[in-house]
Length: 373
Image 1 (cartoon, rainbow, N blue to C red):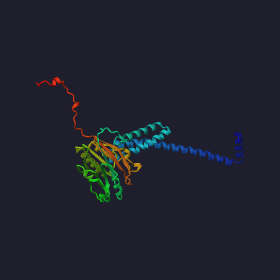
Image 2: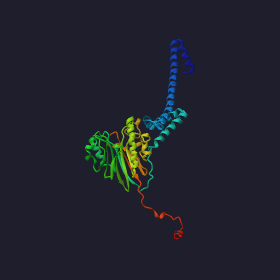
Image 3: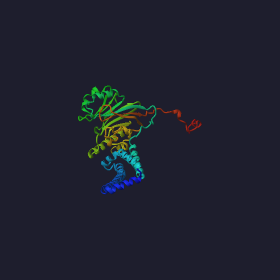
Image 4: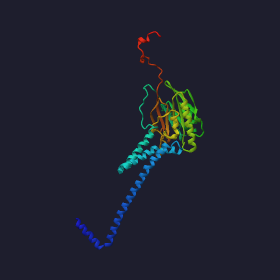
């Protein structure tokens, strides 16, 4: 059937059923109009949403970065830089698809800015070692035992297969502590805090240390050990949830005391544990500015117990200069929501020898042999 035949047929239908034909035409054009209006409304809402986020994300990022020292709420707001980077990246791809070039550039800038702020306090990738090949090496394993009340058998199996020189446990349940003699195996208890509510901290090792104690009113548990030719102090801490007005002030004071402790030690310090906050938060600023400690943890191996939407690095490793961290991994070993974190530490040896053969005299030998004036 050609076009002229179709037009003739439509004319015949219109002549016989004019009301039906007119009604169908009306519904057809109304449907076209409603589809057009619906598309326009969707595009308007999309534009309002992207424009609003274009303003909201940088404002919140600046408030959570520049205003973090003013109030604990602004410091908490700055915790979610990874989420801001992920949302900005999704909006960058959307605007790139829609060919909105100005918004595309702005969202890409927000992605890079948030990732740069994260990278200042957490390593995105493993860094190459800058220490000499004869550096002393030791391994530390850290585990949060919250929810491990009935995991004594699993813990014993983990310790039997562990090659860690030092094991750090926080939130040790009373049930595990009562059965500690059957759990430890070859490891020995080096230091502990007492708490009947299941928040004990334990430090284990196969060989004894040279000193031990507590700091920050029991929130910091430490032991000193000799590794190769170097003495160092390892501090274990745990701050579950500092994001309330009273707890924020208390944790801030404890962080200040930990910083003073690290500053007062003659030997290098390793500080590890759950701080409940990201490394870039103002809450932990004193560890770097006052204590001289540097964050060494890897981003992907921290905070794995948190839901994905609010996940951020809260498990940290801080060290003094001269100590490097490598091969950091997080694995589920006992079947709880908290993964075990292990890391290999390298510490430079003490150089006692003086290379006399490399010294060159400043004056000629003839002048050196002349009698004094």
